[in-house]
Length: 221
Image (cartoon, rainbow, N blue to C red; front, top):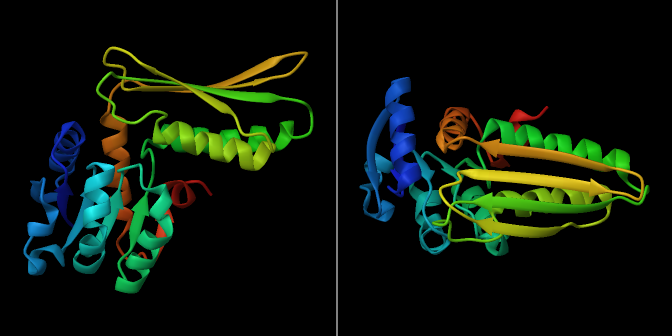
């Protein structure tokens, strides 16, 4: 497998380290993925950790030229239909997630199960997410996905409180409160390493894959 990283910020550098550690060939890391020679792109999986604006500008080119794509960029939910259509039209497999951490995706599954059990019993959910001061979006994509899952399974969509402080990699706490008790489900990342590890796992999953999939649906059986 060969990989090209689209976006060479903090996550791009960490993904580079994971690829090197696992012996996976990194062709290049670039801030201008559309400048990749098409004959090179056809042999590579694109791992995209850019910005919402960059992904919106680049997704059609990625779909039409790369062997496969792993997308960790968030902030494009409103064009999800267009993105999915572009990858299906090009016959290019794509795996996306608001968070590629294995632990976060296990937390997603736990939230679905707990919400199913609590439905109809008067529980009010709330999400608090904390990230470093450099994070551009608020709420985080992970918090939005948690809110969507809880809303779909509990029938009550939670409010989200966003906190930006220090260099916190990411912490999410989901609370379910009733008149008699409170339940908390939380995930705390110690570094960005887990996000990068999961993205590389996703890249290996694209071999032989067809269609567009969320990372969660591929790892949670």
